[in-house]
Length: 49
Image (cartoon, rainbow, N blue to C red; front, side, top):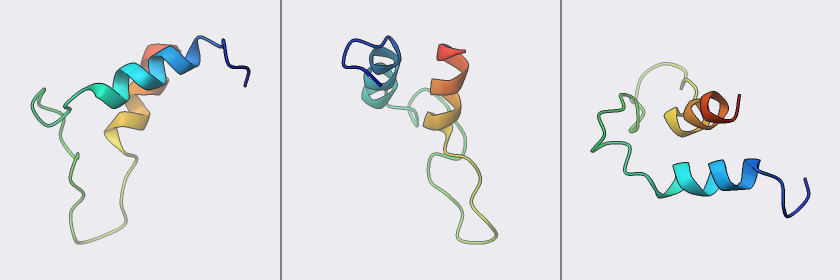
């Protein structure tokens, strides 16, 4: 990806959010079972898509 691609803005924005304070479930993965997709990754896909 180029340095001026808009996806970099979305990536930086989501990385700066405190997702636990915003009420996102699954920020801290459970000790059991297979881990799901990280909420930050899903939010990035949603915003960019």
